[in-house]
Image 1 (cartoon, rainbow, N blue to C red):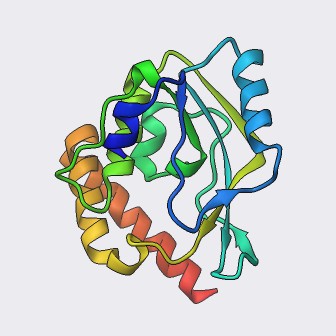
Image 2 (cartoon, rainbow, N blue to C red; image 1 turned 180 degrees about the vertical axis):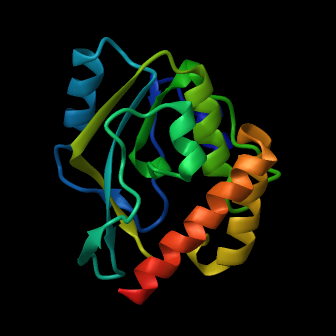
Length: 176
């Protein structure tokens, strides 16, 4: 990611992982139109579908992009996948390589800190996200990293309280 950031000369950045793809052939045109219509916002974001290895849609991601994305939004987790998060190049730093599994989450938070405004296309799916990535197969390590990041940016006690809420939400989903 950092090599890509250092070599880019475009105004906006978007990253896809191996196996991920744009939802439709006109996704980039839709994003470009949103950038122009919203006076070149710091961040443009949309929704994410989950797909299997064959490209079959499994459904929407359980965390959905909010109508209004702010720095406080990410205190509730990664509400927007970094693949559906398009950031103005000049507000972005590089990925923090101390984080092996959650550098994308931390990078998005830092982008949000520097964004003057954001444009959400919450009715538009940007990305078909492959269900089985590196983070998915290293869930515990990823969650511990994410906890450390949340505690740093949002405070230790609020992070503990949110994780109690997250555990309740996960249990509720499993019982359905």
